[in-house]
Length: 165
Ligand code: MG
Image (cartoon, rainbow, N blue to C red; front, top):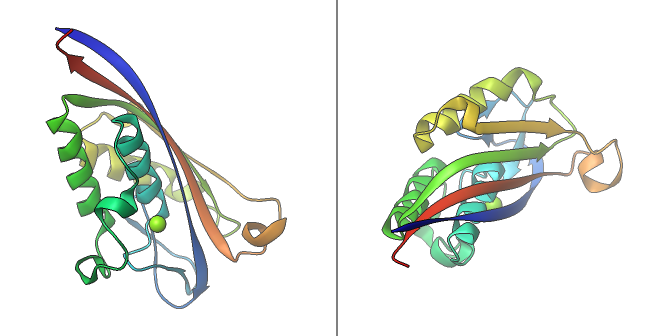
């Protein structure tokens, strides 16, 4: 039995609008009435994480498995989708080694939520918190992200996979 390492990368973006909620890594952010526009709960960080995990395992994107045209996923809790993605990885003998995530958001500042989001993701993923990094940056007031029109997230992961040969 060999163990190989595989990297995965994910990106997601959502529009922001007045009303609704902003949820990141399963944590509700006090966003002064600005919410994420999405079919699901709009957790852009978890969506990018799911895509990173799926990509690392050689699978397709999140929309292939959880299409936004499917009413089943209307308002879906993205952490439940994350559970399902982790199940798909287990079926392929893949384990998650670490997560490195960045959220791009002009406001609010996420520094006060950083540890809570990291702990939320780590406990859901069954990882020690030190295996999960959550960073945030503004877009320096440039472009649609800088004007507060949207939120984006980039996530990279390392997987280990047990293989027969
Ligand atoms: Mg999304």
